Length: 224
Image 1 (spheres, rainbow, N blue to C red):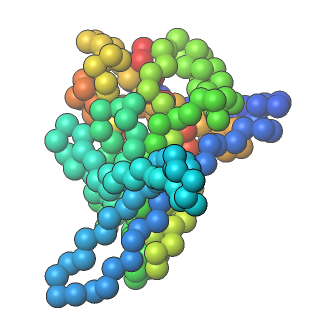
Image 2 (image 1 turned 120 degrees about the horizontal axis):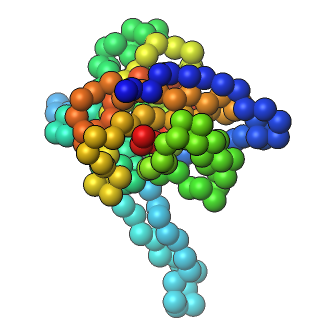
């Protein structure tokens, strides 16, 4: 039996102090228009330390940030930052055109998504809220991710409103959490203490697809 969608407000100190961990900021390199489509490479400095010599210099390691992802062979519709390695792929399955229409995006505005692993040390209250919600349903907690659904306009990023149109997301369930015959759902925790349990709307035992809205949230796959 699929879990029904429920929402509740956490009370007391948990609701008052619940804050989401900030997502990693990534800037897109600017390019000069040409006769061919410019390739935009997004990079993030993952380490920086003084060099071993006495010279006033530093060494850094730079990795390319994945701007697309796929789940069960289906590629995401939306450009963004796809760094959530705790799940087996992540994708926005709602079309860019539908998101743009649902959120009233204008010319030059495009949907943009960010997926990263949850750092429990930085978001202990979000983890606590996830555990409480899972326990209330008699479920086990699996992979946890931070998801932002926003937009890019003129090279600037901002979040979409959380009270907007439905956006569907698909996540791949890792083998170490998959289980034959189990029912999966998502817990979503938003700033302010709003917790939602979102049902899985696909029939693939290796993936979970759920409907959410714009803005930032911490999400966790749960298993019944």
